[in-house]
Length: 377
Image: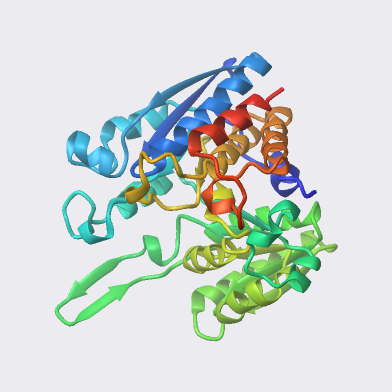
């Protein structure tokens, strides 16, 4: 059976450690909206089990973000939340966003943009990691054909997160709208260095995804990659246009090892890769910061219509806790402890609704969290 730990344990030595040298680890907890509080409760439940086992003290403090922030003070990214994150060693994030039909209301308009982009910019969360794999016990969930799965699916998308068109100038003047994409060499070097280093301890292949036949920014990415590859003679470097990459990541995912790309293309590619395991509820992510603080979150949405119904899959949130232990606190043993617990629970056949196939028994959010917490030993 494939292990969750096989995906990211190999990269922990490249993470920025937390700023605290105290035995007490301070965590800013941002449950957010919709299912965020539901799954966050289970993540903290598992963290508590780790605390009891390891003897390490975790100090958690909750802050409002997104729609919850708007309810608290009329701001999606409240000043108190920012201050709380600034004094924390890591940020554990849930989800933000409200009902689709209410996206034009003040509470929900730009809630995700103001919250997430605000956090990324404030804490220089420049390197986003999203692994994608198909696990043997859950292969039936994947939309891929069995012959494709048999070739092996184990890729890592390294996405630049604080540059590009998302952080460029945006304006509308009458019938004309403009969105500016720009990059500097230094912005490009950071994710590429991580990608090369990760490839050195994986399968030694980096695919830079771009649109260099059209965009000057993509040509700059290629230039920087070419300048850097000499430091990594054992790593195969290739380039692929974004349109082809989206097709190949579904058609032939075993072709990829480490994928490095700019912000918008990384958004597209990582979302495409997220369908490979068969459920967003299995996919954690890490956003590594340059200011001594990083953020960890599941990649799924807030699904407000399901909030409080005890039906959400908390595994991605729980695995995000494992990534936090690995990257921010260098607690590799405890991170693998969580990952082993998740694997053990899945091997026993425990499934939330999104993981169930046929007549498999379904358990709720809290029961899944309980089952995983009980396996922490």
